[in-house]
Image 1 (cartoon, rainbow, N blue to C red):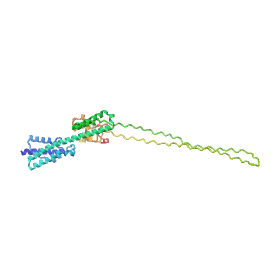
Image 2: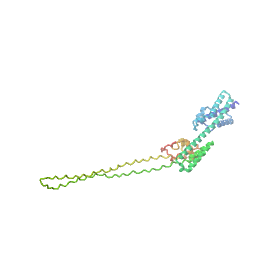
Image 3: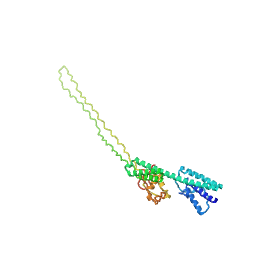
Image 4: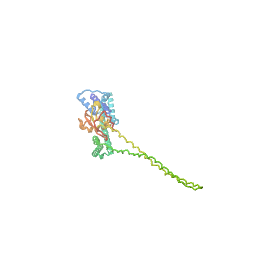
Amino acid sequence: MKTRSILFLIIVLLAGIHSLAAQTGLSGSGAGKSSYEIALGNLQALRSRQVPMYFIPVATYAQAALSDEKQEIPANIRNNEFFIESVRLTNLAQEAFEYGDYDASVNYSAEALKYAQMSDEYVALQLKIKEANDAIAAARERLDWAESIDAAARYRDEMDRARGSLNEALAAQQAERWDDAINAASRVLVSLADVKEAPPVPVAVAPPPIVVTPPPVLPRSPAPAPVAPPPAAVITPPPVAVVPPPAAVITPPPVLPRNPAPVPVAAPPVEQPKPAKIPLPAMYTVRPWALSKDCFWNIAGRGWAYNDSTKWQVIYNANKAKLANPNNPDLLHADIVLDIPSIRGEVREGMWDPTKAYEPLGR
């Protein structure tokens, strides 16, 4: 009885240790399995082989876990009440084992296993809810932007499909059908991928006015003053002398100044057009993982793509048909040419060129 209890205790304690590593963002040789599945698998192997097992230190799991990359789990989800209780029961089971109380250790271990399974289920549910809420928020933001530029006037069918998909996502969210909500929200982004802002209306620039400068006006010479004729000879009988009257003086009329010539007005400066921005790439060829760590998450996070890794499903949904396994976004082979849809009306064209300095897409 004691031997079987000890063997079962070791299995459960190993499961509790693996749950601790998995929920703190680590994963070892059992990556992708829950703590409950690992414990049951070990127990079945023990029953079939009838071989003894030994304790594996926690440091060994942590050492192996650092070699794999796993989705980061927020602390408020990771340290849930089920996980904390599983850790507490695991510690009690180990203490009971060290004191030789094997039956109590088995009981504590069984309870720790139950709470570890509940913690795994809770974490998976909360991560799925967060993914659905983030997808709906991104879809709503994209649709609001399309409404702000009056996209319905030029993209009526796309806008109708996007509104319908968003309503489906909200209904699925209300019914707690999280996968359906994520898929419907992704269809909103796909429907609006080609929506762009209307090109600006060119502003006509008036030509500068032609200024005609009149020739200068030279002042006229004043009219010559009239010369009085010599006085006629008057025979004055002596001895009375007659004095002739003074000659009449004619004053010329004043010369009025002409209006001054108009001053030419300088033409306003012509604004030079700004250089065109390099369009973002519309296609990208997947490179080997060892060279560039290419996956949908990393590609969406690059500045020339979406500058936001959470938009990875837009690229994935647009290229499903090109994948060897369309239902597995983690299986992405090198040399596949991916389409990068537009999500904010940005201009995209051509293949990604590593020699070009693309301006990162704003968040």
